[in-house]
Length: 192
Image (cartoon, rainbow, N blue to C red; front, top):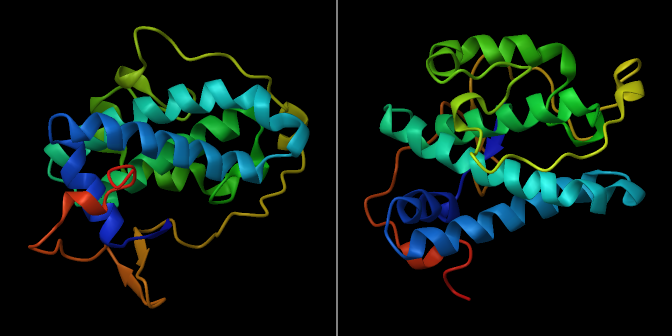
């Protein structure tokens, strides 16, 4: 999968495991992810998906921290959460929100199968053990979109590894090394 990585990602990683600031950053990251993906949805579908996406993305931050704890790099841990989101989008028929084509679902699952299996995550159950006790609000599906899926925001051909685009547009396979001077104040939401 192709993702971006910059100083804000490193700061978010550090802050999500730091008391007090972690909750603020997590809330801001949930808002950011919901906003980005709702912007990809049809305008008349956005509000009916908001609560579902807020709760879903909040749960994926537990996955992110667990992946970091398991030794995954920042880029791979974040990619795992994006793969989870794409499983959820696919299950709902929200193909216009997907980041990779639906015919690559199994490839992305297989790359992280050990982690996914360990945590009960499947394409049909994208949160697995990270499903929150309070549940996830339902949102209407559009299964008809699965018959002839359109993926206007998907980038195919990146299913064999995580590809990280840096601020200069360079593509690095596997991600970049974490800088030694990560400033938590650069994380989303901290400066507010």
